[in-house]
Length: 119
Image (cartoon, rainbow, N blue to C red; front, side, top):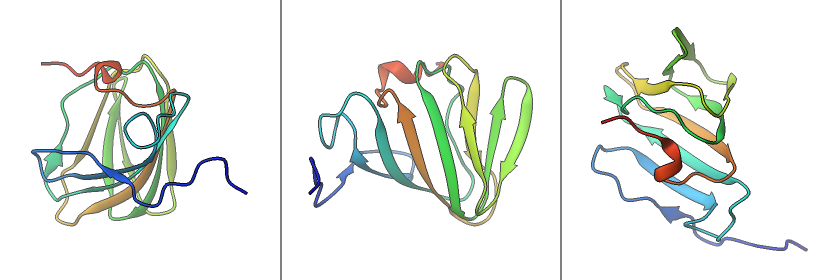
């Protein structure tokens, strides 16, 4: 039997067209140790640079995602996964013409302050 069941994820309000549905984490279940979110980034979307205080693992489902991390540019495709460790300077984007769908796990849980966004 599960210790915590979320029937409906918490949809994080955004103003950039990105869908973020947190299934576990501070906003959805009160978990501070980790967060798990399903995300869909629209075409031509990007986040500001950030230097988070959490590790973030991304698992791509559909589309592609560009990740600039510590001077390197990577493109994730379906089935690929990436771990970006806490303290890395990173920017996630979808400069492509199709949505990017993926899961993200943050350890410890994502917080807006912990993301360390620039600007």
